Length: 244
Image 1: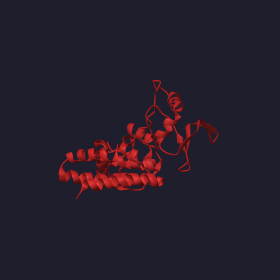
Image 2 (image 1 turned 135 degrees about the vertical axis):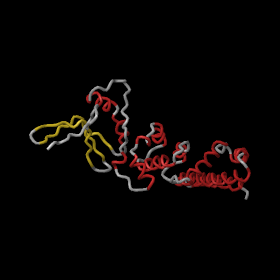
Image 3 (image 1 turned 180 degrees about the vertical axis):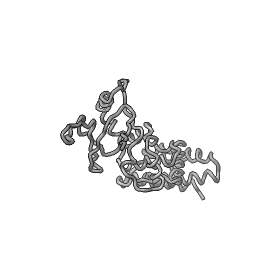
Image 4 (image 1 turned 30 degrees about the vertical axis):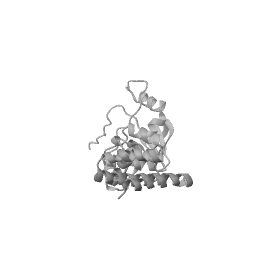
């Protein structure tokens, strides 16, 4: 098989598609790079690793920039990632997948693809979540359901721990200071919780029986159409034990 000719044809057809069918650019990119990655993988097995470098030089000379050695290796890595079980989500762009390529754990990759599609993340937003180790904060139950492809409920999407930014290096010695830190950077806190959360009010007053109580933070999740009550504690929360 003439692997170089097939690779060149795939890339040329993709360039043509991107010019005449703007709406299908993304789908064409991912399909093309998957096919090219597969051909590169097969060619490497037949002719050795150095063949990719040779192809890179020829493609750059004949088609121009964009087909250097590192890019061809990314296409091959992309193919191998999909073959391991990563979904080929057409809502994601090639830029999204490039952020995922360095990740070794296929289940972690699946998670980032899942939230990218669910939350319509941009490449920069995805990059930020990867950098903050979003996946590592998730409960084990969520990871198990993701692996088994079970339906994911909202309780499995709540991270543990939730990271609160402390840019002023304040010593958290009370619930008031913890609340202040959250309110100083509310968007980051809501992002930590997940998708669909909005802030209603802090110190929200409610009446229970004949007395009034205050909710530290009252949130609303518009995706699940429910209020979320947040009680802040700086010490371990202990359950009350009733003795009869």
